[in-house]
Length: 274
Image 1 (tube, helix red, strand yellow):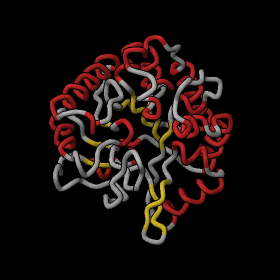
Image 2 (cartoon, rainbow, N blue to C red):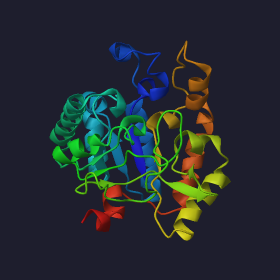
Image 3 (cartoon, rainbow, N blue to C red):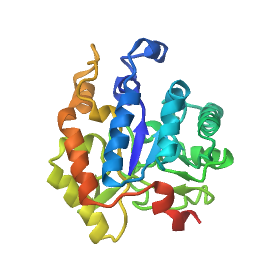
């Protein structure tokens, strides 16, 4: 179980609507939403991995310590939610180093995992894996093996692997189900909100039973917040992706937590990381 810790105004869907220079103008809701998520996990006895933006951690260090104190894993989502595809190697290095240093200073614990914003590592920028290894990360969960208009590397492996370009790093892909030669997304996010819960439960069950593997699931704090401010001027497609079924998300997550056993990425994949 994983959470990508970012606020509603920082998402990729609105990156062309809200400039980063305006982030400080929007009311932050991430801290309250994280409290709701921590309570949900506590009720179900779940420990998870929180891929956290450095920008958010810098402003809410107490929230980061709450995550650690509750027994969850703290991992990096980079500093400023910039897609890896939009950065040079040196810019990417600066971003991930800044985030890792900041998170470790706040938490007083090592940060070994990273997830690229919008799963923005793929065939065109696999050099990013070398940078992650060189900056002290042990694993990544950044390459989504699906076809998508914003990201994806459909021919990448579906389950944790060590990329031949960077064997010192373990890649933990978001979960997919192979269906008639095509990988179907089964890892959460907008797909989980859009699909009936029974479909998501079936997809994850297929991975557990047919493939005999654990699933890598993810969601965001803003997805449990149907009362968040609406973004004016955003494209219709972006608004649909962001707002669809927000009011149903928390109940669906509650069922998901009840129907499956979940754990931290570093513990679930401990054997692969060894």
